[in-house]
Length: 113
Image (tube, rainbow, N blue to C red; front, side, top):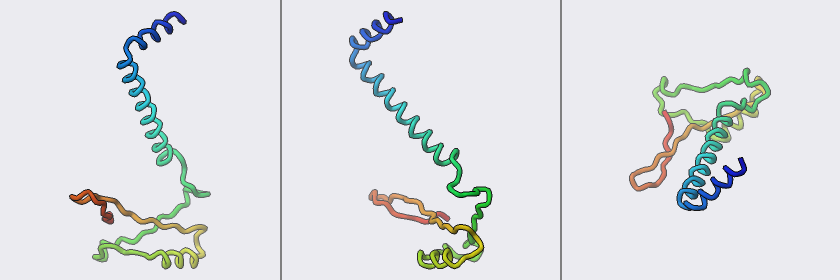
């Protein structure tokens, strides 16, 4: 087996272009797999950061039914709601926003509807 490894190493030294290409391919493959699997782990496999994730309630208002484009809550009003509620253990918020680029390449923010 040691003889086979020495032979393989000699062959790789004879063709430095192929060796470099093989190393770059391996590095990219390992790096991309690591990135993808850590993203999948963070998004899907790991639980929610709550004491009892089965008891999480998602409350929202449907602004389209009222013919409103969006129903925004300011940060001070959200803090007022959060500090004033006594029913829940915790209170959280989110802002759904996506980023698009215009024809000049500058980013602009648009709300998802």
